[in-house]
Amino acid sequence: MKKSIYIVHSAVIAAIYIALTWAFAPISFGHNIFQLRVSEALCILPLFTPGAVFGLFAGCFLSNLLFGGLGIIDLVLGSLATLIGASLTYALRKKNPLIAIFPPVIVNALIVGGYLKFLLFTNIHAYVIMGYTFLGEFLAVYVLGFPLYLALKKHASKIFRNNF
Image (cartoon, rainbow, N blue to C red):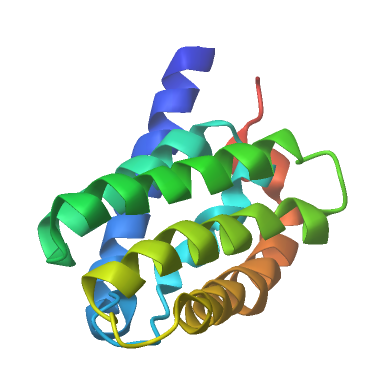
C-alpha cells in the first residue's frame, strides 16, 4: 500500500509539473536572463509526501527533455538541482516551512544559474545570472508555492494520505 501511494504521488506530481511547465513555457526556460518556472511552486510538496521528491525530479527531467532546448547539461544538471532541492526540503520538513522550502531556491540559483552563465550568458557575470535565477526561483517557491502550502496544509491528511 505504501509503495502504491508513493508511486501515485510521484506520478501525479510529475504530470502536474510537466503540465505547468508546458503551459508557462515562454517564461519557464532560461533562454532569457530571467525565468520564472511556475511549476517550481510545487517544490513545497515534499513537506507533505516523500513521493514529491521523485515526482519533482521526474517532472523537471521530462519537462527539460520535452520542452527544453539547452541540451544534456540542462537535462542532467537542472533535474539534479530539483532533486537536491526537493530532497533537502523533505529532510527539513519538520522544521519551519519557510526554512524548509529554501533549499530549492538556493540550489537552483547556484546550479542552474551557474550553467546558464556558460551556456547562454557568457558576457554577464555569474553572480548576476545566479541572482536572476535566485529571484525567479524565490518567486516560484515563496510567492506562488507558500500560499499553495498554506491551502494544502488544511487538508493534507485527506489529499496525501500520509501513510509513510
